[in-house]
Image (cartoon, rainbow, N blue to C red; front, top):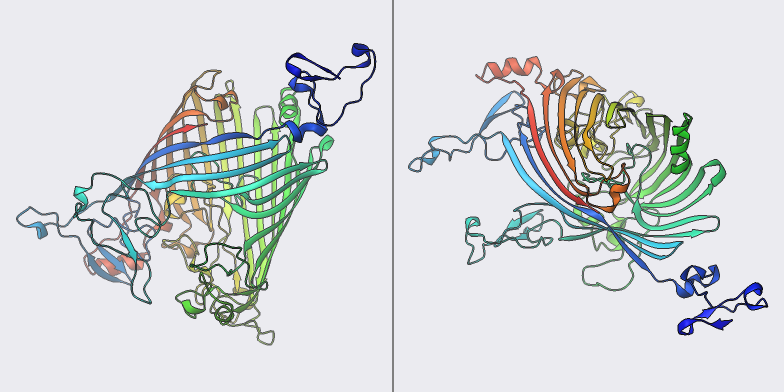
Length: 627
């Protein structure tokens, strides 16, 4: 070894130096590329990459109540708070008016009326990646001002927890002296949990580590969970996403590279129950108070995924590419403490800071077990893509919160079963240099004729597992089965019905033809385009709809978008980077399933009230910067 310019060590070969000199640990070559594998840890330095986006969305909801007159507690979508209407529930008409829209001399002389709700929100998402070496990194996701409604934290506005011992929620405090009324507010302040918001201005969503070993990859921490088309597990990493699947997991994945096969196993922690953490002990290590109340999940995954570079080559040569896999999860829980304010009582529930003696008084024998297989397949041929995902939840449990225990001697009470099914497909054909995309989507989520119907919280949730609402003891043991399946709320197909009013595709099926086209597109990523979609939705079980008919509605959605050429990720036409904006319009025409039944209409007519539905509309504007 000799010293190069500046004293740098240089390793010479036998041809260069006349003899083969043995290297010692810590030596490097004259060029940075001469670092040897065993010396990587000595000379590597962490590299921090930042990805993410900033977005602002403005949305107008018009007549999302569909013209129905249901009270807010049972409505598909509650009427705006500042409007006046006659409520209809249980064949009874009840006035609900805001009589302040008259003249200044007589404010009560006219009822207010407004069918629209409008707001805007924002989010700044950071996805920091700390690359410690070529096989070791720490990943994370941090949201700042996460979906904060613009104007929702004005100066002078604050809350305090309800002072009543049995009360819930918050009470508004006295206004700040210099801002006695909202109209005097001059600035916005940061969101602070329990004061002017339900959350703080910074939210750490995920942090996990990845280590690539010679035989596979190890992941551990709180990480995203995505599979297939995102029908059941959806990471929610899209630029317009609101919901996501995040899991506490220890996972190992290995691959058979020549066959493009991947095998993975994971141990998940869906719910551990109460911990030893208390309000006054902010330091130290908290621990789980009990093991038998843990919800544990074990996952096994098999997948075939063609290398992206080789896949493009295969498609260019006219070969068929098939990707797919099976995601299987087994979930179980023996004991449970799920009681809330409406159950045994909050003192015995799984509250923050609950001690062991109190916790055990609220235990129930749940004995929950469920198998959840999820099959995904993708078929590619030239410019054609067909993709499908099918999932099932098959399980059982001895009891539900507040319900009676399983009794093998009583055929009417042999426990409870889960039999849920969901399927979704996407078909896409690209044409005209990939600028034109023709699509057809179809999906089905099983319904439950014994589980009530549509409500403001979504179909069958969260009150689906309560006595008298789908799980009440009946003479026919087969009726003690929960069949309602709900797709992930981020598996979106429309702008109104399933995105907002029902919150997700649940107990329904749909048909969705659509077309998208880039009117102009440059190689640097800049493009201008638009699209249109028609969604016909129907209920899987007609008795769950308000009108006891299957047809829910027909929705037409239109989109106009523009993407700038800024941003490094625009080198990939399948990714979005730089500035992106879009304008969307949707209209939903409710059909018979969302209308009132004829008997209700006749009863309302006797009280001089007409029950009709009408179309809902939305107008959305999105502006974002992606990096």
